[in-house]
Length: 119
Image 1 (cartoon, rainbow, N blue to C red):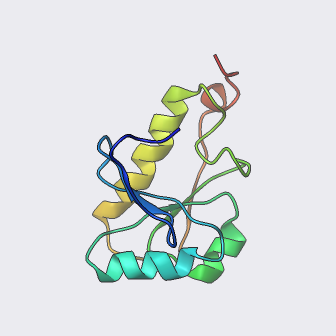
Image 2 (cartoon, rainbow, N blue to C red):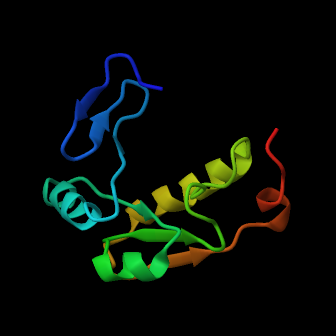
């Protein structure tokens, strides 16, 4: 699904969306370079990772690991809106603090939110 009117930079995977001020998605090898470039331009970044050991090596400025989440479900399973919101809020809250390269905040989420099946 694409946003009508969205600008997309094909080499970096960065796109601006009319509904979201800034959305970025990357392949694993691109992360450190793109994150560094974005931060150098004065924009704060937060990485939501399901592979904390691999991400720690990149030393992202801010990172959140939702404990136990799997690749493809970094915000939770489809349909778990409250869980998605909570993970995003926690990630965005990291922007308020200073960069902590290589430090990854691990957060456990309530079992009732994590185990809820998709609606």
